Image 1 (cartoon, rainbow, N blue to C red):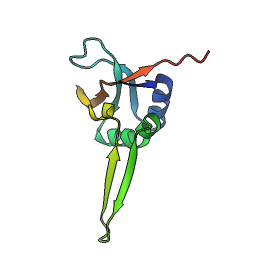
Image 2: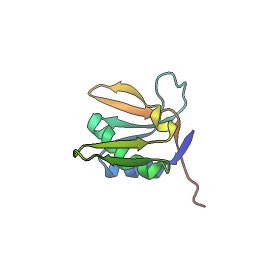
Image 3: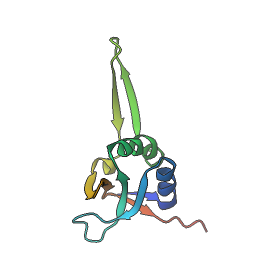
Length: 108
């Protein structure tokens, strides 16, 4: 399980106009909480490309350039980010990661 700082998660999401849900409990989670974001597919892409690199040190993007002006992107995430689930929120969707937990950090 990947554990991230709740305040950092909220700040990164809000800075990128994404609605954070640091303590979401999805279907079949039986009260267990994880992080999630609400929005459309465009907001999900923004979250994955702008926020996850700040959260996950294992995140990487390699751009493979070809001679015919074609590019391919090899994106690597920790396994926790690959296990994404969704729930309908009416007009929007919540995207959540059961294996990513937001925790309070004691600064004392």
